[in-house]
Each structure stands twice: as structure tokens, then as C-alpha cells.
Image (cartoon, rainbow, N blue to C red; front, side):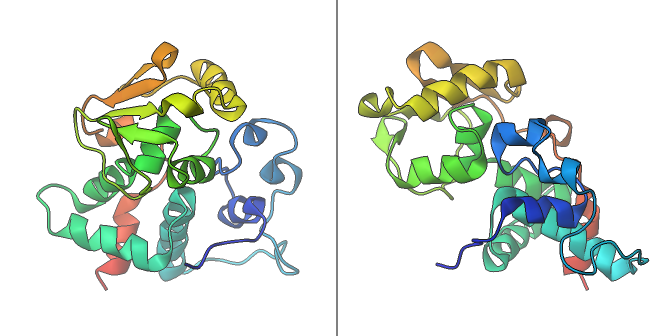
Length: 208
């Protein structure tokens, strides 16, 4: 499957803000956005006025890059969201937040979503006691996500858990760090999703 293999900081610089793709590095002075506050490329420092379409596109790309999805995958989530009751933009974000790799990241078991996706793909996590290696699995309310017994000594997971306690855990997930497990308490509302995006612009883009 195709993957983005270029520097992750370029994606943040393109959007003009931190997408926290590299975990703790994003909080340091080494962050690419802090060092070069302009888009990448030879024309990055030119000032140009964005059209309405460009603004909508950049908002969509921002969300897609944050969760590390390809266009086909992202479009599928939008189509699902558009058929459900409720505000389409909010439902879209709820689908993205329920992905297993994102839940692992939100619970603090990984430094970033890319690392969480790798951990899940390598079979380090159980969902309701069953080994699951599908990053796109949609976690349901009440599902228990835990680190496999043989993987609990991994330094990367332990280090991430310690740092997550300082970053804070979101209210829609419950985490028992001592037992390397967590549970999805409820589907997050828009206010509980710390993502600085205007999801309505994405809906407008796909509605054309």
C-alpha cells in the first residue's frame, strides 16, 4: 500500500501549524514549524491569497495528514459519515478518533499515531482479550484495549505512558497505566476532540 515517506515536518509546515506527527519533538525547539515558519519548497516564502477551494482543500489535507490516511481511505470515512444522523463533519471526526491506532495513541501507549499504527500492525495490542492487528478497526464504547503481556516490557511503550501522564489523557478514554490497558468510555463529542480544524469546510469540499 502507498505510504508517505517524505519528512513529516514538511506536512506541518505546509499547513502552517503543528500536526504533532513526531510526538514529543513537536514540543521542542527542534520542531520544523518553529524553525521555519513558511511552507516547504522553493516558492514557500512567497505570499499568495488562497481561493475558497484552496482553503477547503488545505483543511481536508490537514485532517488527512494528522491521522495518516490516504485519500481513498479518508473519502470512505466521509461517505460513511454522510449517511449517519448528526452533523456530518463531527461524525467524520468521531470515526477517525475511533480508529484503533488513534485510540492507542490517545491512551498514551505510543508517542504518535504513526508509532501506534506500527505497534498495532505488529500485534502488540489486544481488544477485548483478542489479538488485533488492524489499525483501522473502529473501537466501540466499552471495548478494552490492552498491551499484550509479552510486549509490556517494550521501552517505547513504557516511556510513552510516562510522558502521557504529563500531556494528559482525554476524558472519553479511561486508562489503567499500571495494567497497560484502557477502555473507551464514550464516543467523543466535538468539544472532546482537540483538533483545531473547521470540519465544515471538508464537508463543503466533498459536497461539490
